[in-house]
Length: 173
Image (cartoon, rainbow, N blue to C red; front, top):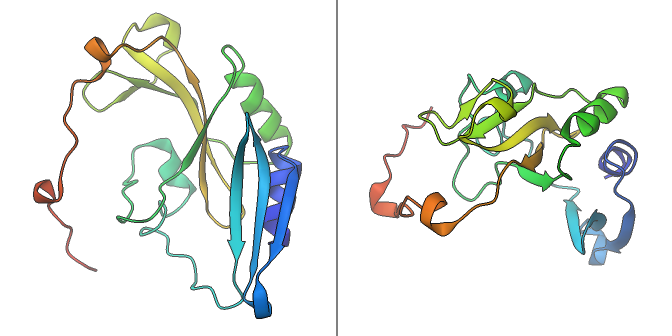
């Protein structure tokens, strides 16, 4: 929890606002101010299972660049995304890099096959979000993102949610 607290407070600039010591030494629950009334919460358990790269989060930082498999298991949390003010995404990326946080290149999510493009967002009307990705000290996967246009249900809700019947599970390794 110490390493996580340093990262979230010092690198991300989110102050620690509440700590809870769980009964009988079972762990800790810490809350960080993520802005706009939201919190980022972490648990620490003395008997926690080890990290599960490739199951609970993408395997390594090379997967941040989108060429690799970023699938994660059902019930895991792939990543957390925070909105940044319009026009400030590059500034946020520069700030994290100055704080020695490895960041992906900026990726432009778009309404195209594959879901993204790499050309500058202002040259492509299909772009919906511009983002970059980075990791926390225990492999957590984070995103800072900037919405590039307003959404409308008529234009942006075009796919029905998939169901359990649609799954094609991968074989276990």
